[in-house]
Image (cartoon, rainbow, N blue to C red; front, top):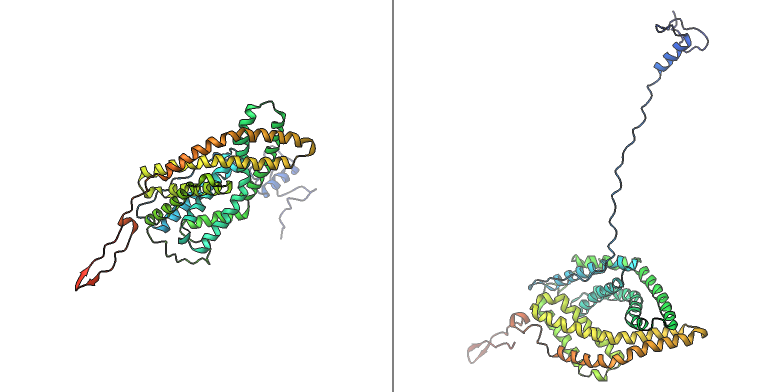
Length: 395
């Protein structure tokens, strides 16, 4: 038996190998056979052209106002609460980026407005809310308001209280030093506000608010049954708003005798009523709602201007208390300039404020009482001398 030729023997000619016509050497023949025995070389992989990355839109750093709430006349209390919760959620989240980037002072303000609108509607419908939900949103909303308060307070101080004085005394070194210290305090307050927005506690609050807006409950332990959810909201809203209006009118009659704390509480009442009318205004006549909102806005602005001066004195006391002996005299001098600048405006503002209170008290009711609005159930017929008598219901 003849064994096949070894084509890969190193030093021996291949007798069974064939060569090309040019008379290649055995070494060339062995190389050719070796190349045939190996798999063909793979082609270099073609370069894959990847699409350029899609540019991501920059976050919207503009501040946003509240979204109008449109309620149908026959809306139930549960439907109204869910729509209002959705509007407050959109308002809240729409201003997060603005605050985190410090793009505009209104970002912090609008975040606080969103929380106050939410808390005002919870207070208005306090008796109709399940207790667990009411307590959760009241506590968490108050926590977040406190974390945002410093940023807003220092914004107001620097822009509304200090700026008019520094614009008039542009070359005053004491005022410049006071402003630099206030700006450092504002930076610290914004850091605290940003930490709150990035916290897990805030995420839980937003998630619970989204669940409420979708018609659910913040917790599985929360009872689903809500006896008030299916009742018409229009009659209840009218009664609650009217009650708040009477309290404000009664407090306004003794405005001259009020302390600063009492005036502050009056301002909070006015603000809550304004938010309630704004959120529920689509249930009532548009012209009357516009008159109410105009009067409440003027009243809130007037009370807010007085409160800003009180806030300014409190923050000035904090700035001067932290100053050392060398800067103490300079800071106290600057604080005196600021307080004196605004003091002479208080009397005029108080006079205008009392006029605004009288105008609000003289406004007609938001809606006229009607039997179908108040939903008064008719009395049962009684027997009198053998006849059926239907008692009339006073409206």
